[in-house]
Amino acid sequence: MMRRGPVAASYSLLAVLALSACSSNASGDAGDTGSLEPLGPVVTAAPDAAGTPFADRAALKAALLDVGDLPVGFTPVPDPEEDLGLPPASESADSDKSSTDPADCAAVLSPVADQRPGAPASASGWFTGPGFATIDQDAASYATGADAAQAFAAVQGRLAGCTQYSGTDADGVQVQYRVGGREQQPAGDASTAFRLVTTSEGVSLVSDVVVVVVGSTVTQLVATGQDPIDAGVFGDLTSTAVAKLAPAPAG
Image 1 (cartoon, rainbow, N blue to C red):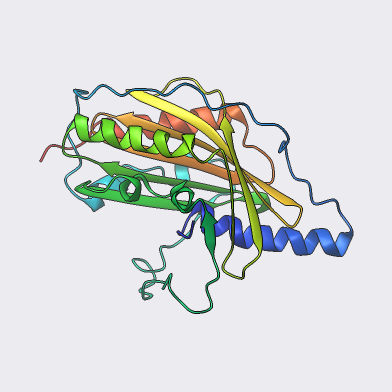
Image 2 (spheres, rainbow, N blue to C red):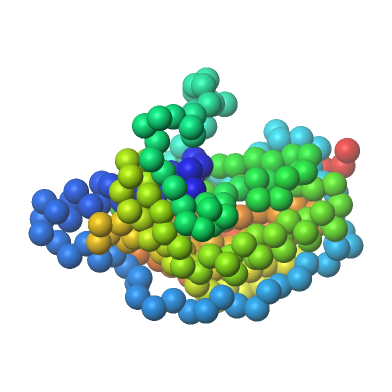
């Protein structure tokens, strides 16, 4: 699971928290990371949902959450390639010891456009906040509602086989993952919510996730931190994300 955004941030944050826990003799337990609820039933998106796809990345990017939509204290994280002009990170570097078992679970939290290729437009945004918290959003706009429904199904299908898995980070440190269900009010044309708990060296991070279909666009919103994000705050963020994606421009 090596992508910019919640997963890459989780690896670096876990390392920071592990060092902090060792230096303070803390237990390293973080947040409500005990038992998880089982995943909820699979949600089906209507293949004929109304909505015009976004024409390109710029238009879709403009419809994602921005810093003004987020809780106080969050700031944007620049895209290393597009904003800073850095070369693409090599995932095949000899020094990279990252792995995931089962391998398919590496795609959990990957952008929707990567989990279901074929979207004419895709975009992502990343933000950091107080206490190392992060909020990330990605979206993929497909040509038809049927394509969006298939992407929504693909995300849920992968989760079913990845409720517990393991791996190593880029330095070879063991990482454990657990996926469970979480309750959230329905949003958009169809939605599903889940929680991912990532644990390494006694330190845990909680990622609350909602995946929503809005017309022919599928968006994934992820809030990660030492503690779960407030449910009301996350619900409001989801509603704002849906409202911004709803008026997709023609063309």
